[in-house]
Amino acid sequence: MATIFGGASAPPSRRRAELLWKEVCATSPASASSQLLKWSGTPITFVRSDHPDNTAGVILLFVVVTPMICILRVGRVLVDGGAGLNLLSLEVLHKMQIVEHKLLLLMAFYGVTDGKMLPLGQIELPITFGGRDNFCMENVVFDVTHFDLPYNAILERPVFTKFMAAVQYAYSTLKISGPSRISTVKADVKGSVHCAEKLYEAMAAASPDDGERPELSSHPPAKQWIAPDDTALTKVVHLGDDPEKMVTIGAQLGEK
Image: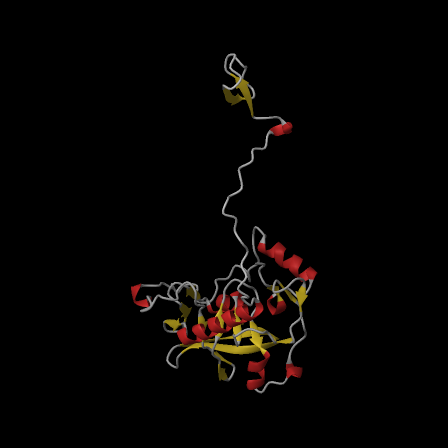
């Protein structure tokens, strides 16, 4: 699957992209690029106490969390650090009572379908993880679109970079560096199950089982040898004067 790229996190023009690539590959980066990232001195570790009590759905279930986005606590938010843009559904934007004309200029993104895909617009919103005594908030630019998925939002690589967050998928746990200590965010198991059920329902609707299966032959196909330059690999020679006594030998061997 192609990596989703573009949207709000991508350079706005080809010229800006070329300048960025040169800076990334520079032997001596600029002073702004060589500064330490926020929370870089705070180690994040996962220990036995982070282990889930029930590991039945560790492989199948997604990591779904419930952060505070703007003024709403938004459930069914998918954590996926592979792509390069953050998605927010139009329905959540309407619940925040934000009108569509406040969305920023459009920029296409790639990797979801063949070719480019245009979102409805982009908007910068604060997202908060943690509780009252220890929380971390960052402004994140979302690409707003109406996607037919069970998620209300999808958080991708730019969010984890800003928060210096780490995800342990085996433990279904997200850890974020906070002002006083590490914030541990456990996945919403019920929300994960709900999303998985919706996806499986969509798969079943797209591929109805009509009960017909292709018939498998009870006789496996015989192995075929392919000789280079259409020459035979073996040959049959007679033993003595009896025409019924024969043996198969390599084609490069002499009859004697």
